[in-house]
Image: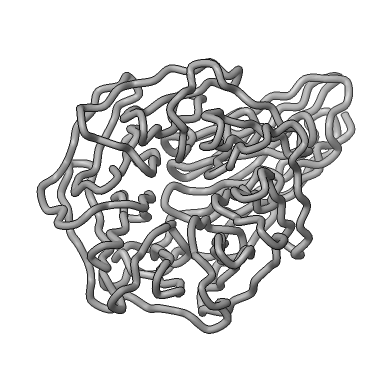
Length: 408
């Protein structure tokens, strides 16, 4: 068995070189095997959005139960209170290693540490904002939608909130980091998909008449994929705005959407109690065996071991489905160099995925479209002494290492 390994560190003007190797990928399994879990989940919890976390867990929001849930690969559950009437809605793993979530009912953003400590931020958010979903940006901040006031918000890992309204008038909903250093989002009521830059500049793309886009993610092909409200279709948009709509083989409304470890997009179909997948060429396959009647699958995300996890809103369960793929390769290497007023971090990854670096003002993230090295540079008088570097492969779960940034 291959174990976690640290490469030798050289402290000085060259600073530090550190590597992290994850456990070997799991073997591929049969596709479509479903396992459901309900033990430890409070009644009528309203399982909504979910995201993979470190150490092989999946985090999920419980909108009606005012809780954040955490489930392990074996189904062990734990819940964390977010405050009466908070209504946690969207979730994302931040560059600081904490879970960040929106509280739709009390106009706030929450932060949950791995040890279970909850902090709430609301200063700077407009009353009646109703924050819905949240994602990471390449600027090292978290970005979230405000359906109640048709704005998009940005919150730093330190809790500073900034809102953007210019160019937004159609209640943005889901968001995802794109291939162009921007955050992309859907506007169901406006029938459009938009992008917002790190400085708040917005551009929108109208979709064909009748399409109300819902969840949006970036696929392994570098395009934006989205589901549509009350429609048996899935859309694909290039970064330049060219749209293709797929309908063949989709027999029920698609709702939740996530990139899988097999290179396909996986989606939920609540009205049919099904989970489906679509290839980047548009080939669809649907699965229902093993999903209990009246389950209403909603949110979906990749999990450890090459599986997808999804929440059953009506069934009040968490469930997983095998994809037939092994876990993506999590191995990565980190090297840092530090000189006066400059800190450079090079991260070498085996495949596509997110790389983030957290260290105060030096926090940043980037999308590595292919295997190779990404370089993150920070300049300033107050450089961090340590950094948390995380790699999340597309369709996989995050791995992280804390490194010394040296004292050169």
